[in-house]
Image (cartoon, rainbow, N blue to C red; front, side, top):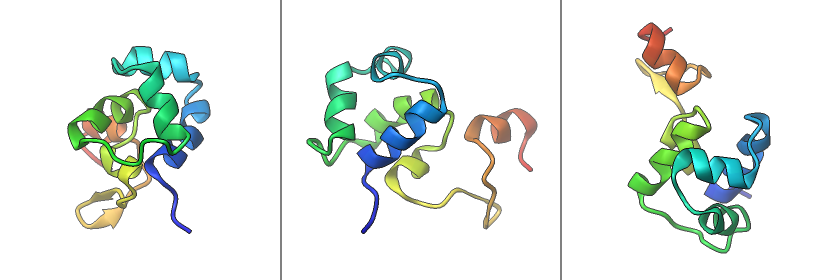
Length: 89
């Protein structure tokens, strides 16, 4: 069984020391939207809508939608902002 977008957010959120409320505030989205995604009541979202929570969680949006993170064709495991700050691995 594959994880949903909400499953990924629910797993990453506490790892990044966020509550649903703090994630929503930092991302500029509604708490209700975060809850619905995490509870799989909302199974889809626009890519542009997922960019804000991904940024707040310090991961690429592709992580939330279940695509591997790549840099020059290989999996890095490095958070998005780390790649951006350092110019890559």
